[in-house]
Amino acid sequence: MEEFVRFFLSILFLCVCVFYNHSTFAYTLHLMHTNDLHAHFLPSNQNNQVCTDQSPDCAGGFSRIKTLIDQERDKHKDLILLDAGDRFSGTIFYTLRKSQDLAPILKTFHYDALTIGNHELDDGTGEFRSFFDKVDTPVVASNVRFLKDSALDKQIASSKIITRNGKKIGIIGVLTEETKTACEHADEIEIEDVQTAVAREIQKLKRQGVHIIIVLSHIGYEEDQKLAQTVPGIHMIVGGHSHTILSSDPDNKEATGTYPTVVINPEQKPVLIVTAGVFGRYIGRLDVEFDEENTPIAWNGNALFVHSSIKPDPAIERRVNYAYQLVERQGQEKITTLKEDLLMTPQKSFCSESCHIGEVLSNALLQGAVGADIALLNAGGIRAGLSKGDMTLSDLIDVFPFDSKAVLIQMTGQQLIDYLSYALQSYSPTDRTNSFLQSAGLSYSFDEEARLPFNILIHGKPLQKNRTYTIVTASFLANGGDGFPVFKPIKTFPQTLRGILNQQLKKNPIPSFKNNIQKEEPSTLKKAA
Image (cartoon, rainbow, N blue to C red; front, side):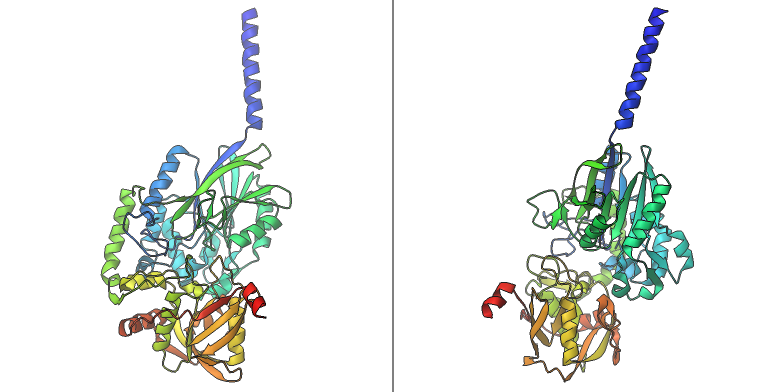
């Protein structure tokens, strides 16, 4: 009897210890995430060009990404995999075949949730509906309503709850409000204020007993930080849209900030923000430990470089090769031979300053637009540079993936000054500014501090405020894209922008770099004054 009592007490003590440890146990969340893949099935280099070699800079590719995902799932069966939008548009794979290959490949990744990027609407809600049906993965968007597809509006939820080790995790999707001015099919959707939508969804999820809130965001890194600072209840933000690279490696020169970026919310608790660049050159991987009150107390992770030594997944590699064979013949159409590299902004993968490839494209557009005085292209539409050698249609699509109608509009000189001024208002020296204007027939300088244009020349002569100028540009911009004022076209060309560029680059020699946009540092202007 005495032995039985001792045995019973020992079991009771053990149970109490186990219960106690469980009640104070810090839950660890294992997360992997992608964003802004832009149909980059194949690897790309730092200049955003597709590459197939084994050089250290040739990174990414869907088959390598699949390998990394599988490796991490083998280590952590409870891994959460999320994508923060913009899977569409960016390579010849999407341009020629839309989501036919993209959806089946991404389906094999087994995402727990996706959110909508603005480029998912490049071809209207019809193509997105096709992708949604094929990918068979939950899509969340709390601030989007589909006006022209009621079925899609009912299918896409504001949020999703997933359970890991007894923890309820709420995933809330949000899309940038810029989509209303950055998408030619903006009339097919309605977008609510991000903070309002997220705050409402957090309250709903809390009523359902959710422990941890993750915002799956396509609003950009700076806006992610504002959201974290303003709306209580968020634990993590998995972001996209701004193509920002974060890193926990202090030697990573591509990184804009630390991975994760930690912001203190209104409740004085940490919010962890992560994002992983663009085109799948990086994939995010984060472990977060939570205390018994579901507050993040420790974390470890990084944006992993998808380097060339990673063994490709054989099944995805076969699927990518199959898609490549279908588009190769058309994509390998030679346009011209380049005698030198046509770069984006030096040391940066965008055209938000004077940019050689931007000059070349603008010049080709002006050459093909009879009756135009100048050509204007927004930097957001230029996504890669080019290396010397043969330039193909596939290369042109990589450089200029978002096609649009070419139109003529007219402005007075004063309106043109105002137009350039608006383009500079959101200028950032460290990130892509979509509205920044590349030009031909027009050169200008701008004050980095005041963000104003000056010394504006039209074919080498000073701009005249009262004169009317004829401009060739994208219908996207003429219709108010990127927030520009609307100008009714006086002519719409039968060819698209890319069609004109293709034709003119074949016919005419590539001009040398004129560096026709000059940035004046604030200190330079003060010294001159």
